[in-house]
Length: 288
Length: 161
Ligand SMILES: Cc1cc2nc3c(=O)[nH]c(=O)nc-3n(C[C@H](O)[C@H](O)[C@H](O)COP(=O)(O)OP(=O)(O)OC[C@H]3O[C@@H](n4cnc5c(N)ncnc54)[C@H](O)[C@@H]3O)c2cc1C
Ligand code: FES
Ligand code: FES
Image (cartoon, rainbow over all chains, first blue to last red; front, side, top):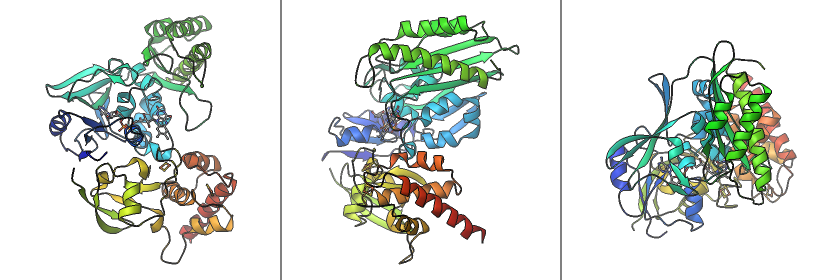
């Protein structure tokens, strides 16, 4: 730690320059990074604090959707009434991260870029079809959330690149989402499995768009296209739910560990996806 | 690598100190500012003994770099009492015997203050969830919860009067 420098740039351009140096690492809330630093599991030379970078903190509405600063804390997201009403699943994923203290700091950008397979904020973002606004030496680019994590602890971000914000697309009428996870304890635990479901319905309650993403059951969170497709055209009848669940289970490639066996995780992922679909359906304005 | 000069406000007072590279806010409070009320139970964000309020948000000071608080406002356990007059939360912790060894107590008091600042009338279940990041090996939590609920009631009365 004796070589560690700390920089707090105020513009995205300054942040890119700082992050382009060898051994530079971005810092958002530090609830993963500082734990790893203190345990000696990571040894950066320069910490680049993103929290003072313009656009990295805060929530704004733009072009009918939302732009959520990548370093915005879970506490701020949870207090944002309109975001919570329009994207309840995305917000409940963020709010499930850690204790009140952790919520005061933990960000969705950090949750994604830490690249844990069990990150609670990620499945709902993927199901929302959110994109990442990435800034780097070659300017700005935009990429789907599911393209960022390539394996445990690994991301597709290039040298000097960081996530400035997430973009959540405009919502049609009768649309909502939900995220559910299973943990052995109700608080302060790591997900055994998680599922995010995002639905849009027509005025008769028929599903017109459905996206299902699962976490903690593969090396990265997964968008399960077949699972979403199984719900489209239905009113979440038993046959469509069963087909969705089967698609979720077929996509699972979990590990066995002290939190659950492969078989258990696979089964639970299906159950969580089914329950999250029902919640999203109800929130979207229809009753079962 | 040289130390970083940091100016911040701690419990309402302007402070300045030098932060060694990688130094946490918890270490800066304890070692540079001699505010040893905040405790290190785990150093990994799990126990809450190091809880402080940073710009109005409850955080674990073990997971904040000292250099991050440049220009920020920090409230610690030392700011809770007014001179020799205890804060109602402190008084109720004593009355309800909500502490034994006391290592978790500063963190619990700061966390409880942050709760009552934002929600003067919390339910018991809201209080339990809010304090879930504060571990206590001694009390079994029940007395802590009763003390916080009682302090909340008293503070509401004071405010109404
Ligand atoms: C007590 C405790 C409980 C926890 N509980 C949960 C839980 O229930 N569920 C869960 O999913 N996680 C949990 N976590 C893990 C952690 O809190 C989350 O992953 C959190 O979202 C990380 O966000 P952060 O802002 O603190 O990230 P940081 O620690 O600041 O960063 C994490 C990683 O991402 C990189 N990074 C951060 N921001 C960016 C960016 N904008 N662009 C590029 N790279 C970036 C950093 O370099 C670092 O590698 C817990 C942690 C603790 C300490
Ligand atoms: S010492 Fe900070 S949470 Fe335990
Ligand atoms: S009183 Fe001993 S840990 Fe809480």
